[in-house]
Length: 118
Image (cartoon, rainbow, N blue to C red):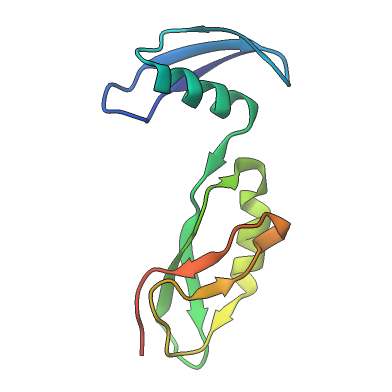
């Protein structure tokens, strides 16, 4: 398998060509530093993303609470996580960092508030 990864660790934005199988990286080309090697390897074998979205507020129309994952989630779980979040509601008041959805989709990652609302 061959995949091009654009590194986002630094402003350089190296285009790294990764060759490997489902479980191993066999060759990397185009990286500019050791951090690029680590990033491209992780992105190839097990890509993760921070999830940012919104949650409905109970009893309040036309207002939503911004939330995010407190750690990166496996990329292949993002749609499953969004289904859970879509059904979630929050009661006011909310502080920054309050856990809105704990251990979403059994990933060990929490969805937390990013804005205080009273």
